[in-house]
Length: 160
Image (cartoon, one colour):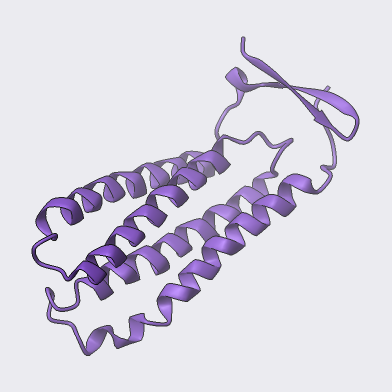
């Protein structure tokens, strides 16, 4: 059995990773992370092949940025689900997962729509998306901040 020893509060805590069981929320967020990665790969391929002659270099660069941030934060969402509760509490995992999911949707998907506004002929209707992108970026940053604080805060109890 795979076991990891981690120094926490001066004591070594044995984490048996092979016995870590995912609850329903962790499984759902893991599936969501996989869906976000699936979309990132597909959209990345779309940008690299189908859109290179359709979008201006600036818009293609923006589109690629959206894909890159979606992929990185989908991996972050997956990583959070794999952390044992002695590292990050279940409540904090849910908070971080919601922040990452909302951040990906607001940040990356608004960039996709802004980049493709002429293709979809939504130029004027896309005006509301301008402020959505930085809000999404703040949500992603908040997810990382909550993760850092959650990992550093002492936990109530430790397994024997």
